[in-house]
Length: 521
Image (tube, rainbow, N blue to C red; front, side):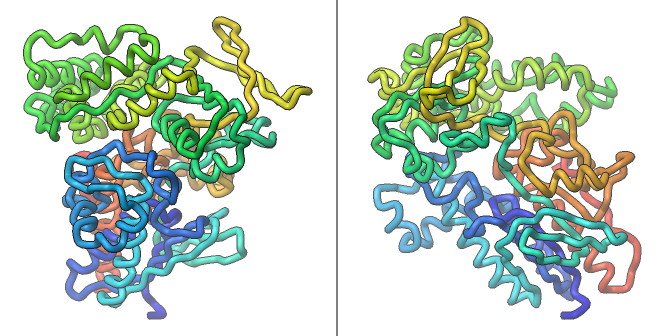
């Protein structure tokens, strides 16, 4: 085993587990099977759950139906089959849940599944003559000795010499709240909500900064923990997430990859209007004539009116949602070929609005949220805000930049998700990669990677074929990277390239295997 290639996966959440799985799965397709040593380095005590799926309240629901949840590329039913075959593993922890193809399951259940998938991947690696080794440490630095010769360094002074490194760091903490992060009573993330709830006085007034899925998890989790103080939700747009209808998955007939490729061939570069027109045409086809597009662009109504309408609408198919979900197949390719000025305009003016419609919540959570608002336990504030440091009375003031409204709270919880500006991520590793020119920020999110291969671009824009990234860190290049099916597809492509390279090296050939284009899948 002395000369086996070494691969380091930085991050043991969904992306990291998917990467490890596909590396072993790809190796098993080769004869003879290449032998590898794969280290999965994760700072948390559990490998598999990551930030999004760790042990927490059952109110933290997935926003994807159980029948199509999967970190395994090409196998959308993998999670559902696991729940059916392993009832004894999860039933004691989630006794009240009926898992069916159309159900929305708690996020912690997916975390348990990912842990078991990782253990099975470790066992499968041994059967294939390879090893998958978990390492509980934080990666803080990386040095380049030469091609396929990287030194991965951890905060615990462990150094791993690797031939390939895959960055799978997922949802990194944010520095967007600046000096406030050092203040007691400020939480950069609501996860795990159960732990945050235990750290807060039950009568405290809480300010949630943001109104997306993490804010929904936070308010419902705090309520589940018996929190009695009022919860204030501060949203720049004032929009809450839409509510999922009863529709099944949809296969586009107009909005296809071939159609986008033809547009690129004819125009060279896409305009935002081209993509809006394509999506609009597909929605009109799916919904039927007379669909009201004006509702997408109308000002947000008051939260109770909005939730009442959304809950009523969720009792039937909402085909426009199915069209937006199906757009995953074209977004990455379209984004890559879009005019830079239109990318900037979309990111600046329309992204938050798009996410409010694209990322929906289960009706069960919408009903709970409506009840909290109706009872006066949750209040939603619209418009930009500024947070003032803790005053003499021990409270923070959140000031509305528009109306000048001032709200005093005892606790502030950031629910903004991962910042698109990578320089605002709290990551010693990224800081050092930027300082050394091994990586550089992408102005549209995360770090710059090659579109076709996922290889990280450093100084001068040169991509290294021994350093790749998967997930949120590639958002600037791949646009929408936070859904499992996209993570799995990219993990499979990275695995194909790495295992192909390893297999060729083992056979004595020096030419590199062709890398399949991510957008073509």
